Amino acid sequence: MGCGCGCSSGDSKPREVSLKTEKQTDQDGSLHLPAEVMEKLRVTPGSKVLISASSNGLLLRSTNPELSKLYIEPTNTCNLSCRTCIRHTWKDSEGFMSREVYLKLLAEASEFKSLRKISFWGFGEPLLHPDIVEMVAQAKQLGVETQIITNGLLLDKKMAEGLMQAGLDSIVVSIDGTSEEVQADIRSGADLNAIKKNVKYLRLIRERKSQMNPEIGIEFVVTRSNVKELGNLKILANELGASFIFISNLLPYSSEMKDDILYLDSVRMGTGENDNPRIYFPPIDNRRDEGENIIKVSGPLDLSHTTLKKGDGYCRFVDEGTLVVSWDGEVSPCVALMRSYSCYVLDRKKDIKKYTVGNVAKDTIKDLWEKPDFVSFRERVQRFDFAPCTCCGGCDMSESNEEDCYGDTFPVCGDCLWAQGVIQCP
Image (cartoon, rainbow, N blue to C red; front, side, top):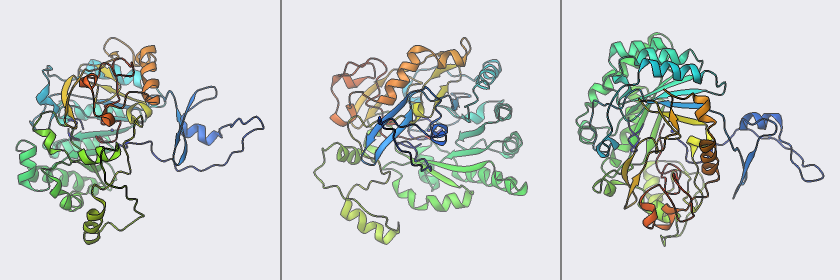
């Protein structure tokens, strides 16, 4: 687990589509979408398309994306007790997903031809599940991409070889320090050298078999406590054979943790609460000597190319057709709503009430996905007409996610830092 949300999904804005096409409108002004565009949007004739205006033009999205990704939580138990973890704020019982629930889930998921990825992840350590290797192998039989997010401590030789044999496509290792001291401080004594040894062995057997998979990645939650570690992160990635690094902000779960965030100025800059002028840079080489001078000029540097604007939220979970299934079979639309917990949005305490649409042990995935209330919720999230609590500073109604000042009812998402691109997951 990792990502600062306690979880261990990415872009804060819709991914750019590498597709260019030109189409002329009809005499009545109608625009017919070419087949290749409809395929990219995953829409069929007669379905609705959401059109959003931006400074760069128009953005087209399907209003009801098909199910394409499952986050499955094998267990919510963990072998660590990281001080940044959500687990310190809940009183949930712990357990492991049963074989019966998992096999039922896979059987029903196989009916969705749109399903492309299953990620084994959660508010726990997936490798603790005694059947995790078999679970990956069974998921691969569906012909989908598989991924595991792990702290890496249990990735011993037997586990690495088992996951290779199972056909795992990618593994993301959560590391919050490139030095032993910082890693151990944030991750409750996690042995960085042991993690490095485990990942290096996985890389070795992958090379021996002349395989590209599993692809290795690193997830890093950046805070004031470890921001200086970023300088050595690429070195560590090269050492481990990691082909990508995923950096997220921290979602604080205590009043002490809220002082460790690095995005307070960036958020206020995007909401007009900062008097600094906006500075727009052309492409510039990212070298240390030049970078220091750039930061002196710019102040808070927009690294993500994301600006907070009122009503400008975007939920990649909903837009990419995601379901999150907890170890006990409860189904939620996203990471942020799968548990009840307290957190801090900037310097405001907020109580999050979990939102589940049903349980796969009792209901079918198809029935849950097509449930009218759930379809309506996904449409609301895509329009994102929620009150902009993060931008306005928050009133009493922003102390929970049950209602907002626009009259929206539970669950409301205007204050969601995932939707604002502040918090991200692999």
